[in-house]
Image (cartoon, rainbow, N blue to C red; front, top):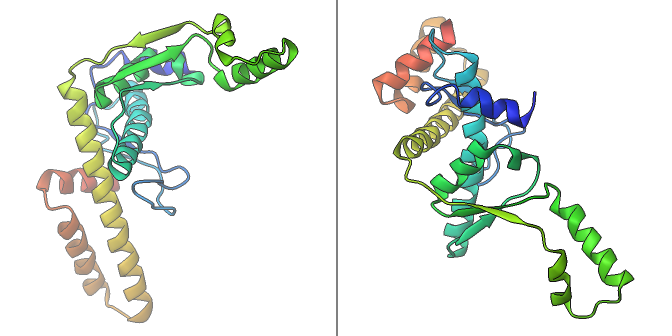
Length: 220
């Protein structure tokens, strides 16, 4: 229900318990560029609790931000030295720590959530007081908190797994799309369609444990 609640639920477990959320509620943007992708949980089993689901959802928000920032750095050939974050999510310290640990940089958090509104306020002060030198606005500076990064191999592994899950999800969606096109053109028998589907799953889910997970989650 709230940012604080998502943090408290997430901290009740050490990790997501193997659950991953693909946060494609409005498709997937860069670097995936899949507008027709849909959100889904992967890896749910009988031991999964709501805490695991919330943790997976929170991690997916951090992962999506990190994968986009990695994409920007790679495409534009630059390296982030730190990251200033504002907005409602700064209330969630676990989320901010995830960002710092994954990017391995310092995350700087202002005391004010809505820095855009604060910027408008500074413009008003500048005009009202006829300030010409912007350095004179330093007296109105907002206090900031710096969150240093920590070595977190478990989170790094979860991030790699999440990216693998998205790659396999997108590959499966391509396979499904191809099957739909083929099926609309040709009148396959039920037997042929069945083995075509099995082939598609085995083709794009080469690792047996991923195949069993998808099979388990699909038919439960």
